[in-house]
Length: 367
Image (cartoon, rainbow, N blue to C red; front, side):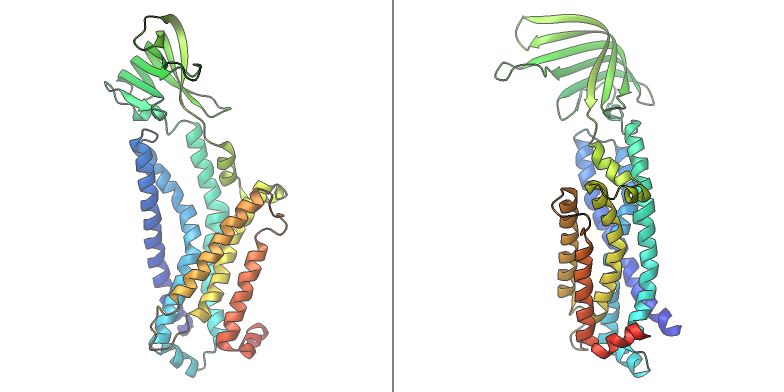
């Protein structure tokens, strides 16, 4: 038990530090991406923080296998370099027992990863989808009173003299948008609209958001020419945001048990096997890390880091590629990602045999 606690503490300290660092790196990257969207008028400041917080469970579940891999590799590597492993082996701790102790900690990580990926992440994505559909990330949140602002990538210019505190209603409105019905090659035609009031509406079928203008006038024509139309209206709908890809949100937000029932569908099979593959990946990476961590005292703890990361990148890239193949029907969902895990498991067994010997491998399965 003392040895188990010592080895677990050695791995866990590196695992936690690596997880925090990797999570901050990926969140920083996503933060920059979202800030660019906010600068272009597609997101509000509140939406940036909300989206970042909702990505943490998925990111953490995906990064924990890598953190465990590095924790075992660097933790055991330091112990080999400082001859601590030599002392443990001399005291009767065999290589099979070392693997079993490692698998004990790995099991705890796999339970956490499985909970995050199979249960928490779909619920979080479903919550994010509901917020998007309900207009929590409303484009009107970006509008400031008394200023001209661009929406829909400069396809709509909006000015409102007054805005309610909840950003749901606006007053004394000016809207300018290009005429989408104009023929190619002709001079650019614009629709200029003025209205006394307006509010946001959501089309639940398409996910499109509209600003509904009340009691106003529309001017249609080419800038600089006298030939234009004037239409008075009681209500006018102008689209300010287009609904996002429903299929993409649906795959991320579908509960795992629903994917299991629909596993014959290519998209459902790809998402289901991806979720199941991450905990499996954690187990196989732990098996690979144990023999790869074995270094000579003069080599240092980082001696095997390059080949280990190369194996991880090959493993991860094949998983991403295979998910796309399953989704597009290039390979059967029956074969799926399982061949990748089988291949990497064989590599792990070969590394264990090469480092520790065949008879120790047999002993591992007998005891």
